[in-house]
Length: 486
Image 1: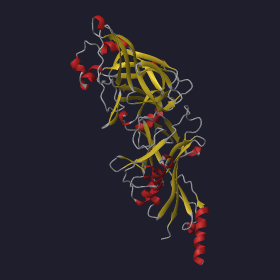
Image 2: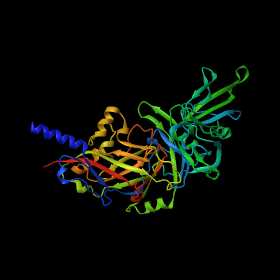
Image 3: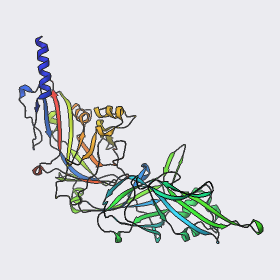
Image 4: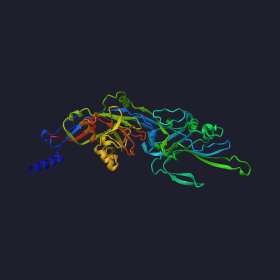
């Protein structure tokens, strides 16, 4: 009976007693040493952080990729152009001299992400031909050779990317034209004269008969924002590659080449696909973002000194900036037979008045690197279905509910902060299963159903994190644990 009473008392104390500390020097306990065996104790560990450049990425790895122009007064300017293939159809159109091109429409279905001004954006878009053949698998750092002459321009008041922004298009179904509703998409009318010459009957048919020959001849297209016509903040949107939809719709009329009573005019409709799919390789997207950036002085100063420690951190997608964090005092908790009950990383967005832009990424991710410098998810944020890595509490929640929100990373607009749950990661650090106490955070797409640990091209968001102890909004790693009596 005495043992039962003692166990009950221990349980009650464990539930209701919290020791707390916020120690600017790094680590500390605000609990009576005699209570350590029965209480749940709290440490708030200091973090050191710096902004570093993210690795480049390939657009082909994502279902959607970024396009646009964003003039961020805090971080700097991001320009995301788009190179795309003009795909070879099963039957290559051959336009005769007497052909009349009725329409050439570039169709780019919108993705799910937009980041920027939603009230007064205004975009001037230009389409030109590539001056080199489009090649697959290029990184976003590639700067493409592009011809000077524009084959299309369009002024957009905004990117109509929301599900409610469906469009009505005229399409040919069952030998008649019908008006149907379709998913949100950017439609740009291209130069009929350009395509009449590009696919002229005079072009060597042998050249157009193979994929390589066709690609070397047509080269591809290049979309860009006319920067000289941009004002304000702008924004970054995403386009997605969808088979039988992303590409060029071509309609033309020409004689059927017959004489006498058989002579007539044929109406030809062709689709030149940018995205294709098959049963072996899956969807094959040939859209590539090409990114250029100009950073503000404060950002560049951190990039030039990656060994420093800073009070303001900058995070940027697509594949732009990430923050490297380090836990310098975690060794003080090792070898103490600690069981981590809960560990959470709390990150605050920059205080009012320090961020002129006032917009922050809706979602961040957190990951680590192994001893070889390869990116790895932390155990709590491992959404891989066939991983052999350590399985944390959040990982079991992932399998049970299919929900990455258990890991955290979503912005809390009311509190202006992000919280990550990293219980298993901290426990593994204390037990030596993971040796490095260095990890990274970066923006990712809010719509992504997984927990990315790689540089992303499917989002264009950014955020600014404060780590200023004087503001009271410094980063925190709160660890709640119990310690064995042995």
